[in-house]
Length: 175
Image 1: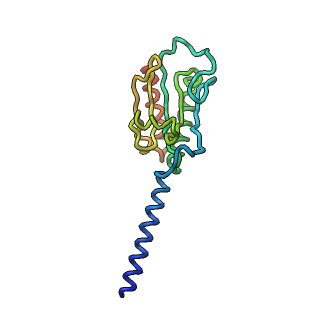
Image 2: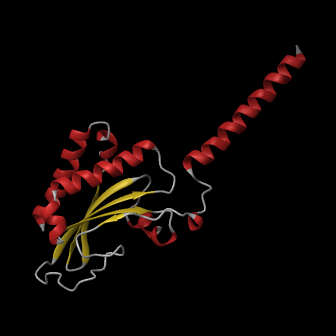
Image 3: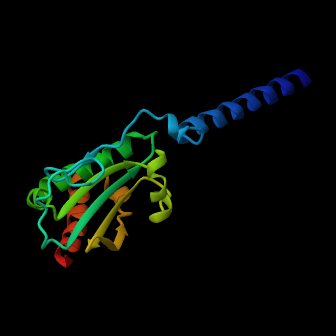
């Protein structure tokens, strides 16, 4: 009987250890962001670079405000996180072609595990993968909103698109 109890304890201890190791890898807490080979992907208006700087000085001087949508993610991502990013990009491209081309709207997908992007976690009080819509006036951020319902709607493409597009439209209307 004692042998059976010891065997059960050993098995339970091993199971707990395996669950702990799995959790570390699943949530990426031990990932060294400086060694990540994944680069953040950026979808920008025509004639722009990945840093957001215009490569052409044709940017209209009368455009004093613009809206920027940021999808923030980490290096390790699950299926849902990748789906949210794809839906966000598609919703923006389909709903705002003219605004993207005209420079009124920009979209960036940013890996916050990369050293140069870590400040966004504090700037936007991020605690998970997030979609932030930000309005800039005269080159300075005037307001922003975390679209937290993306997690609620990601299972319905239609609801997701409507939510994201409505929120961006509201910010564009204010510009």
